[in-house]
Amino acid sequence: MFSREKSNKEPRLPDEAIKILKSLAAKWDDIPDPDALQVFRLKGAMTNEVYQIKWLTKPNLDDASLQRSRKVLVRIYGSGVDVFFNREDEIRTFEFMSKKGQGPRLLGRFSNGRVEEFIRARTLTAADLRDPEISALIATKMREFHQLDMPGSKTVTLWKRLCHWLKEATRLSSEKEAEEFRFNDLDNEISMLQKNLSTGNQLVGFCHNDLQYGNIMMDEITKLITIIDYEYASYNHVAFDIANHFCEMAADYHTENPHVMDYKKYPGLEERRRFICIYLNGSGKQPSDSEVNQLLEIVEKFTLASHLAWGLWGIISEHVNKIDFDYMEYARQRFRQYWARKPQLLEVSSSRKS
Image (tube, rainbow, N blue to C red; front, top):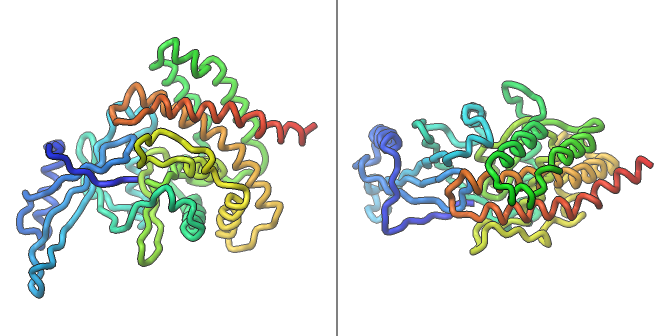
């Protein structure tokens, strides 16, 4: 979801980061001056500050007009966002994914950030998620991601995370905000969702939990999909990951109002069915209609958990994050969608039980 921005005022990186960058560049024979680094702030990040670092390489001996470059990324962790996840867990996930060839390599760490390999692929756009060919690639990659054998606990974290985020939102918010967002009701809502959505023989896997278009990259030549940014990754119900991805189709974080969700863009039944068929087909056998329908139904219900999670995230972010984004209005939209969709989605399961 990044686009490049360079202002008249040069962005200032931490001294630790600059030292790592110059040390890296000094090891590359094709960089004439390790000190001559160019810094570009990348727009679109909502948790961290992300910068593209670029050095011009030595001229091509055969054609001096061909000026190439080397690039890396610097990620500066957002202040206060450790309330959302354990940073050391996220680093371990990043290193694991790197070793498995699933994401960028870790090139260096400093006290409040890290230096990453620059992936020469393009970040997807909001429109890309609706492209049937690209969507099919994402579904296949998601299945592969979910089947990774990540070291550590394989316990579903969703419900514990929701309870923790509610506690933090309550702690940070004013009485007026607590009343507006009905904090007194949310404990029961989380318990109700857990009871309704944790039943049956559900698929559990290692989930990204934030699969919006900005966290997906694609090589235009090979069509290889790479999933990046693992802050929220954990073992979870795979239906949540799919539901969250569907919800992200209503977002476009590169408009004049990046916080505004357009739920008319939420994928229709056939689009959702196609995605889930391709996802299930990743097991190596054609899924039955009953398998597809079962996952379709539970995915829709898990959109409620997605709305709650990112609604709470928005409220907390309003109080701890300094990035220019209307977190509170974003939270309002997610909660409005939760309360509007809940009767319809949970009424289906209730009527089937009666």
